[in-house]
Structure formats: structure tokens, C-alpha cells
Image (cartoon, rainbow, N blue to C red; front, side, top):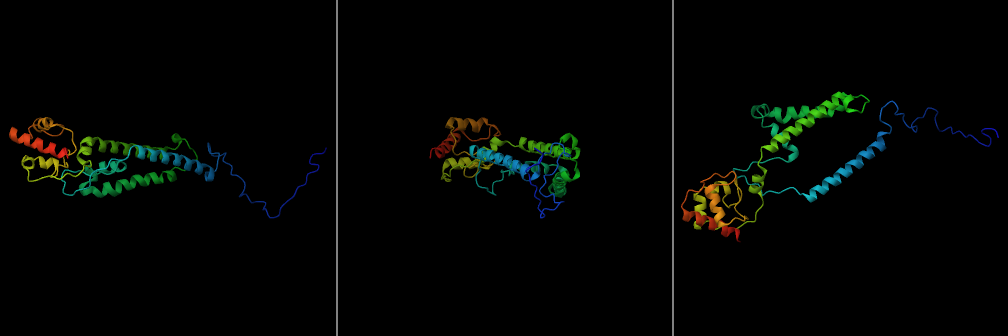
Length: 254
């Protein structure tokens, strides 16, 4: 049998000789790149992003973000904080070169240069290599950005007493307080109101509502202090101290 016997070759004049639109590209000159960006590579990126998004949503359901009470402009001891992903900018504005008269540097110039450098990194280093060690410009900018964000976020979070803040700003049920009672008068005269709020909701100190302390424990805290509360904060008599403790206990029993 002769080679090609019984075979017919048909040509189509509608296909141009130099039409290469349907010919797969040759990626042999690009090390490690063996597939087209669209749709193969991009589809894999979308799938990886979807897995991350589902995992992140599961975390938000399992550990929801803690809520605080409503903002009150009359609360002098409240220190507002941005969300965790903006803590690095919050920390940056604490430094002298990025605050005060130089606030424009901290809010516009430095962030603009940083994010602009990250956006321009792919265009500054157009080499075909995919290994980080052979992409010095892009790799250096990325590492500097990650290190700066991590360090500033760490510094901002390290200077916040999160337990005291959460205790002072937690949501508590409103309790009707008799401000004409003797216990409340002692509470306001002893300057307790400055730290624990007019309605015992907590200002710079923790709230005194929804607590599980006994009267003796409250008296001991008032005399000896606890945490950031100094000792000898209460300067009244033993009788007044007992009335103050009974007043606080009566609010927590309702």
C-alpha cells in the first residue's frame, strides 16, 4: 500500500495562509509559562480567590466582629480607632514627620508614593522571569511594603489596651437609674462619674452595669484599686462606701 493512498486533501480558500489567530502561542521562550493568561491562568486565579473568599466568610460567621455601644461625642475618654486594615496609616500619623504641620505628608504624599510604587512595580521590571530572586525591583518593593505595613500595624495594636477598651465600650442594657438616691449622690461626689459615666455605662473606666461582683468585692476595688484604677480612689466613710456598693448591686439585680 502506498503512503497516502485513499486519502483526499481538501483546501479552503476562506482561510488565509498567514492567519495565525487560531494557532496557540509558543511560550517556550518564557520559562515556567506554559499556558495562556486567558482563560486558563485567570480561571485558576478566580478559583483560588473564591476559595479564599468562602474561607473568610466562614471566619466572619464563626468569630463575628465585636460591636461597641453607640458613639457619644460627650464621652471624653473614648479614643476612636480605625479598622485593623487601616491601623498602619493610623500609626503613621503619630510620628512628627507625618502629623501636625506635616499632616499632608502623612496622609497624601507618603501613602501616594507607597501605593504608586507598588502599582508601577510590574511596569518597572518587565523581565520574563517569574522567580522572585530574578525580579529585584518588584520583589524589593513588595517586601518593603509588607514589612512597613506589618510593623506599623503591630506598633498601633501593641499600644492599645484591648481588654479595657472592650470592657469600657461593650453594649449594656439600659437601666433606669434614680439619680436622686443617696447612693447615686455618693457616686457622683466621689468622682466615680468621671471614669464610669453618668449612667454607669463606662467612659475611660469599665461600665458598672452587668457585673458579677459582690458588695464586698466592690468595696475592696474602691479602696485598693484594680487594673488602671488607682488605690484609695474612694475617700468617703465606711458607711458611704457601703451605700455606694449597695447602690451598684441594686442596679445589677434588675
